[in-house]
Image 1 (cartoon, one colour):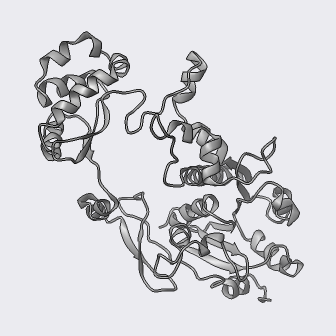
Image 2 (image 1 turned 135 degrees about the horizontal axis):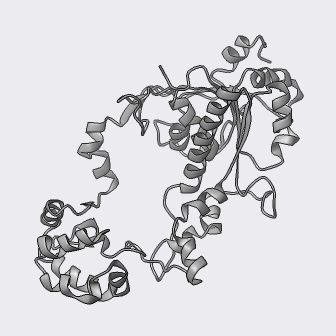
Image 3 (image 1 turned 90 degrees about the vertical axis):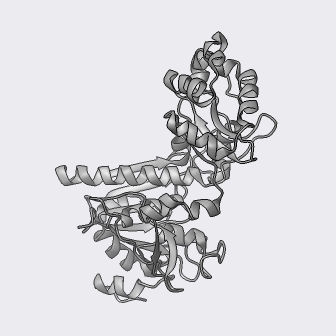
Length: 381
């Protein structure tokens, strides 16, 4: 039985963060009704034609949903919208603060129609405050929250190539929504769940704020190295291939020196005796390591590292990931139905009782409008 079977989600969403939240809920078995603008649909529908003529972004974020084409600003759509709200357990929206009130879909208006609703909203900066009305996109948010300043090399900053701000906020919103549904099951009361991209990414800064709070220092960009651990990161082997390793404990350091490199002198060097010392002396230590690593190919080093119990792995390109033996074993890639026929997609990244939940189809714009509205006793306009 799907975990969220019997839960209906009404999603007034656009872009990535909101759609990822509702896709996760759909993957867990909720019935998700996605409201889209007639004739246009979600903005992601027009991003590209990579997925058999459809947008790769839309396919990624919107499987398993029912698409209902309604203009929420049109008074003629009000009857249908109110019927949908009244029959929904969760109302989700991810537009700029103020949008919901302008179209009559703010929390008080929605709760008047469904008192126990879980009202979930995803914003850029929060519900109020000096930046609340600003549009927030992933690139902008990576800059605002310091992520770009932490990413890249000493010479040049970089953005994270995937939309981490949207993915993070959408994931947090899904978790909080499920928690609110559990609370409602116990108390009968609805909740208001609010998640912002800004707060999410500041949370994701992890240990970096402590560097500022306790030392008033700014972290340096370290490229493919870790600012707090050494040795840590991908290194070039003698065959030109990169391989990754992570020394995170005294046992790892000892194993690297003795079992992998046969370098008793490194283990006895007081400069490198602690992790903080190795970070401080990173330039000298890594120069020695890179000379050692040039003597063998990446496969040999990985074999030695695994034998010593040190975390390590290959540095794969996308083609190698798609052909990865563990990916095939995990059966993570699956076909879903779509208006263009079956297409491959990355499935659910979680298992429930050892099985991956089934994948719903990718909807055409407005595909389910008539069916959904007739089920509610509303004739499509």
